[in-house]
Amino acid sequence: MSAAEPAAPSEPGDPFAAAAAEGIHRLAIPTPFTVGRVNVYLLEDEPLTLIDTGPNSGTSLDALERGLAARGHAIADLELVILTHEHYDHLGLVEVIRRRSGAEVAASEVARPFVERDGDEADADDAFAVELMRRHGVPADTASALRSASRAFRGWGSHTTVDRALGDGETIELRDRTLEVAFRPGHSPSDTVFHDPRRRLALGGDHLLRDISSNPLASRAPRGGQRTQALVVYLESLRRTREMDLDVVLPGHGDPVLDHRGLIDARLALHARRAEKLHGLISERSRSAHELARALWGDVALTQAYLTLSEVLGHTDLLVNAGRVVEEDSEGVVRFAPAA
Image 1 (tube, rainbow, N blue to C red):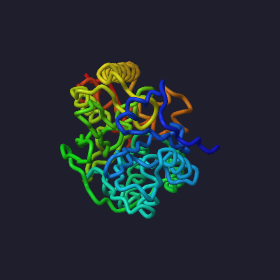
Image 2 (image 1 turned 180 degrees about the horizontal axis):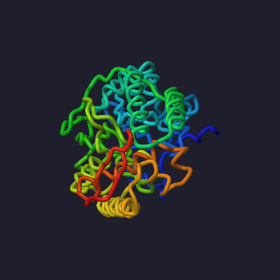
Image 3 (image 1 turned 90 degrees about the vertical axis):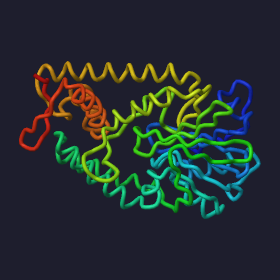
Image 4 (image 1 turned 180 degrees about the vertical axis):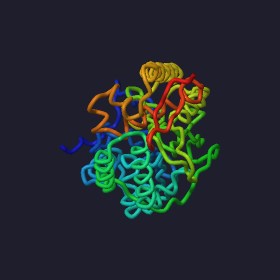
């Protein structure tokens, strides 16, 4: 992977120019993941604040240092790091930054266990994922291979102490702005949006992306029990964001969202269409979630088994909740069948 160019001050025509004029500067940090670069935001305020960090790699650290230098800053100058959610591309450098700057770390109370006890939480997530895959028809060798791949990804992450655990509705007071904490789970259990009502903008992490439909991954319930219905939760989060008065959402990947209501309406319609397509397949005959994924995506359902399984389960949750589909147990594997 080639090194990223340092982020330069915004120029006319830059989609982030309006944010830069308000002291919010996007630094595009490379990642090893298919999603590409992650947007890290420098808030030139007091305290000097960074929203997310990029993954734990030398390439990413170098890009971050050069991006800060282009604004006349260094990592040692940072005083506050705010994390939008628990994924490695957003928090991997947090401990490096903390050691070199002494910055305070803030994250949602839901994200706190993942930030502070990454290894333990990742082990529990992996065990949950393997059991879920087996329960829904994914072959044992595929589930085992994906668990090994998940362990390999852990090097891109990090763990550190969360100095301030944020609750929904709290505020973060900076010299020139107030950020309201808006909990928006779905894409991950800990997704959090930071809303600046005076400027009618939100720092949105991966909650709402302009060019990519954020994938709600199947996740274990925070306190045990059955899995969280990730897509159901995500759609409710989108509806709550739709009610916010915003001119712009600054996302974790890609360009700003300038019409959040229009985009959310399109995403709600997209998920409704996907649910209908799955209902059509289930109406033909009962199938496991993995069989449904294979019908939709072929071999991609093997190479990205957990992602495609999560996609299917999200939409079968909608169908089951609506009474249109039922779950049946067939020798330890769940199959979905049309409701009588």
